[in-house]
View 1 (cartoon, each protein chain N blue to C red):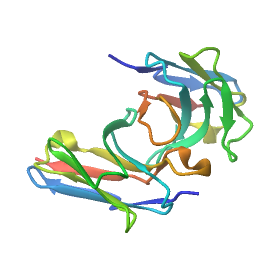
View 2: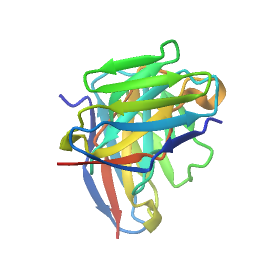
View 3: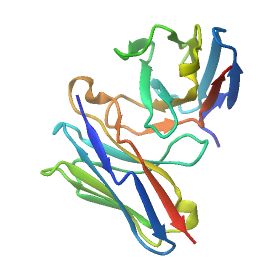
View 4: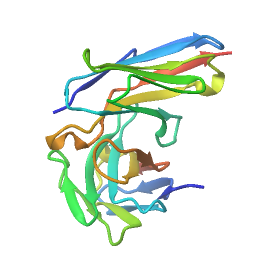
Length: 113
Length: 114
């Protein structure tokens, strides 16, 4: 059974049109992460929530925002997608931060036209 | 911050042969080292991990070794099968400061030829 579920699997959006990607988890983990992965590259951490505490990476553009309304759900909002934002977006969860297993969803492939 | 180097970037083996992927890390405080397998169009899947209090861990055809002194760890896959073909990422985390997050290597594309 899927434990980290991302919707949709594929998303096409227009240049500049806001888009929201969603992630849900059944693991009751404290930490939820959002990664961006471009072709043939390693995942790049955008930000994470430790419970309700939002932690942004220093190099994450302001164009990317996140919300975590409850333990199970987390959203990635891209306010004005550019062509360079086309990528796979991965959600992951872990019980705690540091030296604990992280479980990834199947990802959302974002295309910007 | 932590830096993880992974080699080789591509690896091609014949079915039944062994495959070895190597990673080095820079932060001696890192204490957790997972390996992920990512198939095309899918999210990374944890296949094995090791913590700094052990030197080796095995799970069927997959094993990971850790040398804390040299700060390197390796993934060993024996009796490779075509379904092992994927991109493999090593990662490190668990040290102090901002090292709580996973730092990934750049990945190894493994191709197992039938």
